[in-house]
Length: 256
Ligand SMILES: [Zn+2]
Image 1 (cartoon, rainbow, N blue to C red):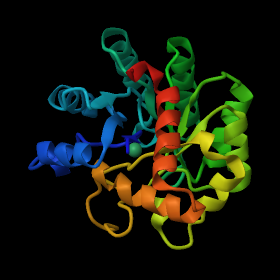
Image 2: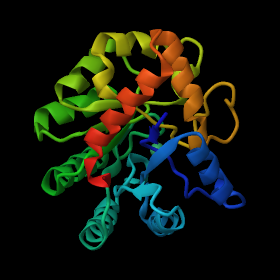
Image 3: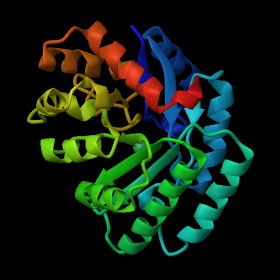
Image 4: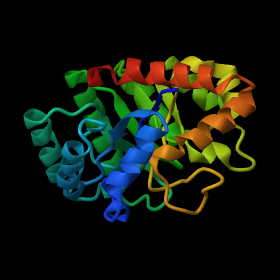
């Protein structure tokens, strides 16, 4: 069974003591590719170091996370934009809107999100979108801009209605550890939409799936998420992993 982790921050310092073993566990679990989202200007260097160390298993994306967008965001976007000219990246991410922590820079977040979506359009790269307490706003901006870009709403746990609008935009949704938590009914959303618009992700080191909830997450734990989705949908794990891997390959086709 092949698994693809479309969103994992494996350059995080929590892996500094056992990163190579953690990557071996991922490979042993069947993980063939891991997309690595950037967060801020100071994560670029460690992300590119991981790309080399992982021997091609980890592929970097470029973008500035909404929580890193403040009054000085234009200089950060300039740095990210320069990197896109001199290095190969496999997506634009992670980008988006986060109104959970702070709405002070709402306007700046929206500007930065749209600008980075336009990079994706120009460079023909998929996006990895973060939206927290802002999914309707992110969908609205994408509908309004109508750029026709491909990509993933990462860590999706929204409604059927939101999922339909994301599908109608031609985008897909990332399914991670949250799908294993009680009271989260992502199975119903997948049944409504169909398997074609979903991919797996961990968002490691965050959001560990049950039974590892509360502990450090890692890409090998995709197997727990696969198991849960397979149970929810009553579809074999083999069929789900194949469908989600094929979706990942279609979206992140420049990795192949
Ligand atoms: Zn993330």
